[in-house]
Length: 242
Ligand code: ATP
Image 1 (cartoon, helix red, strand yellow):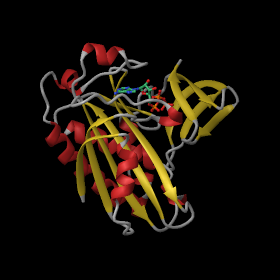
Image 2: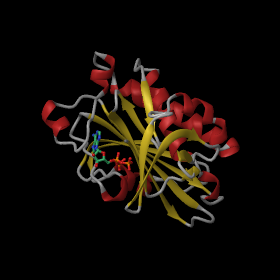
Image 3: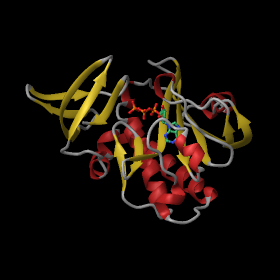
Image 4: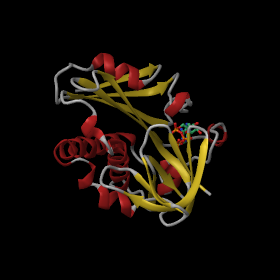
């Protein structure tokens, strides 16, 4: 089911209320405007009226979250494919799931889980895509941001992107529930931003530098350090180019 609304605090919160609670089912929710869109660790996601796509999907699963490793990377890939189908080129994925163009952020993803993480629970997938931001709106964002208008050099239909997004996301979740991230690892790797480059990983205030050596079949990031390869898994970890 697909629900649309004019304004809401966060589509991630609204979609949870709208879900029919049936295992396996997907519920989608779109808003023109989010008054408190959020990123990871309480950060703000800027989604001014009419300038972005703010969409969330609620995926009810019954087998717990243990098999969800790498899901956020696979969602990033599904978003990238939907954007490519609408003409965007040279898109990159910054681990775990930002979509970048020329090093600037075009889309952000926020995954949240509600319910019993060892059994029946709701996996909430929030996706924000910049469609057309004003100069002022772009400057108000704390890091370099870009919109689809700039990437494609022309106006792109939000409806077309949303339709494609529902398509790529539904297909990906279907595949993921059978084969996990391993199915998408090669495609993800083709778009890995900073591959082979010196990066800094920040986890719980600790910083570590090394070479970005790609991802493993669980979606963990491999960093080649002086003391060997280290694997980092999602959660509270941030990746930056050194
Ligand atoms: P991480 O690499 O740890 O995920 P992040 O800074 O990209 O770090 P997120 O939680 O993914 O963090 O996203 C929130 C951040 O994204 C905000 O702090 C802001 O810098 C940036 N941001 C907010 N709104 C937008 C937007 N519309 N477009 C691009 N970037 C945005």
